[in-house]
Length: 45
Image (cartoon, rainbow, N blue to C red; front, side):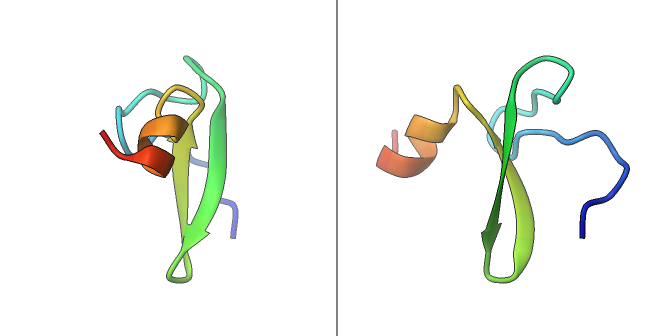
């Protein structure tokens, strides 16, 4: 399911060229979050 396009954080839009990107799955869909946005995703704003 991994595609050859540049991975981009779903929250801030930074790419894997700028920051480390983590892959997660939600409702059967592959999504991406960077390490800076991960705490926001987990705890909310």
